Image (cartoon, rainbow, N blue to C red; front, side, top):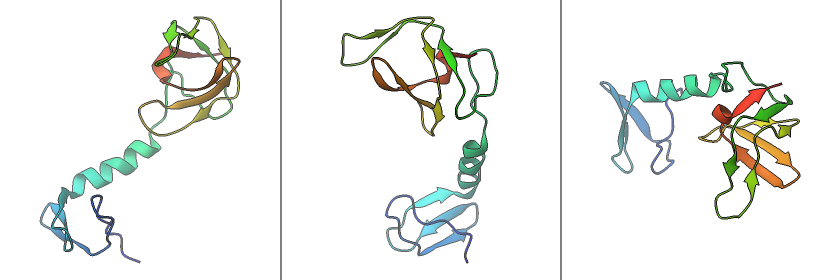
Length: 113
């Protein structure tokens, strides 16, 4: 099995390395080989709370700041405890369920209990 990734633009697997870049023969898109390796490292990176503690699935956390919910009049209050978090990829690393609903939160606004 080839270790060369599929094209991120057209998703075709007809790609090849060319110097420091991968090239898609179908659409002509080029992207750096180093960036493909960095994306794998980011997936393995640990998610840390506001104090630098490593978070894991199932942990309990507390909000350290009032957070306004975008597109709603709901405000998540400081000190609210959230049980059984789930870590996901992306900008908002934590998926959780609270009394007010399901939310995606950034780990920098959480403190591990």
